[in-house]
Image (cartoon, rainbow, N blue to C red):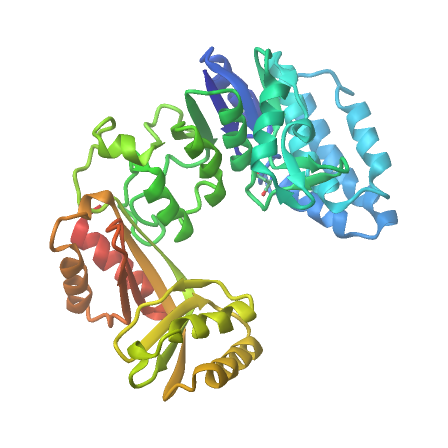
Length: 437
Ligand code: ASP
């Protein structure tokens, strides 16, 4: 049995929702369906963005702004052929609650309503995510959700469930971060013991490189959970980066598919160990699976003679970052120097951080570089195979691109290269050319 999730573009218009309904009906295994709110379409904004604006308005102005959301759903209801007024009592109920409701309740109503419509079209039960997905205050509670969800869905043949939100102990609605319906889909897939989590979106799958920069990038047919984490972190944003955790616990593969091109093979994301043991075959036999990158990092370079024999030096530097709540990305280091790479922060924070490090470890020299782009070369194929880093570095050097930093963990699943923001796109093209991923 399969759990299926459809994203915002798939749910954006009456036509696309009818398409979704055909896709679900074409496979009897597709019994549990999770949906996003309608996304952008025909010059209309994402419903979630419209609702964010409703929630941000003065309570007495909310109903006026909500009228547009109401109209959008009424058009969808008419377009899919449901009776006029099918959503009336739901929409009225939401409208009445607007003045006193919390932000997350308002923002989550797009998912609620689109699930309500699809359930009717499919003849599946509608089950509110508030009863299944549990938060402790504002934090998602995975263990509790797992048991509540299993009980809540036990014995049901099929259901449509809104993505993106759940509820906390007070019964208040709480949302995940944006794009969170992917996480909901994974939670439901695990709860019902699905053999596959199909995630329908509006692209053919994960690409070997960003197609806006490298136009001939191709779809990766098989990716492991580990490779996905590396790529998602580096900005390949087909899936919410946290959506992997619930399914990984249960070894359920994810299949990324395109609602608008359902025949395409898509990308299967599979348990790492099963891939390494040969259960899944990848069409392309390259040492590299994909290349992804992000711009606008900072790197702080710290020099001090005899640094490596000063016990606790690195810990004290890192405690300064912790003090300012700055997450660290990478720490390449030399004998008498270390570099800390982190996402850009405000100048005042950098100044305070630098001062704190000066006081804490009294470095000989400290300097900041503000235009760092990181590129990750990712793939299990490079493990124990000499030459990958050499090829990457050579290629960058031949393209006259200065390599500022290189970092490779012992797991040998990725090599991280730091270049300047200005060289970022040229570096992606050059590296892609080298490995032709
Ligand atoms: N509708 C929400 C968003 O736009 C959640 C989702 O689609 O996953 O972020």
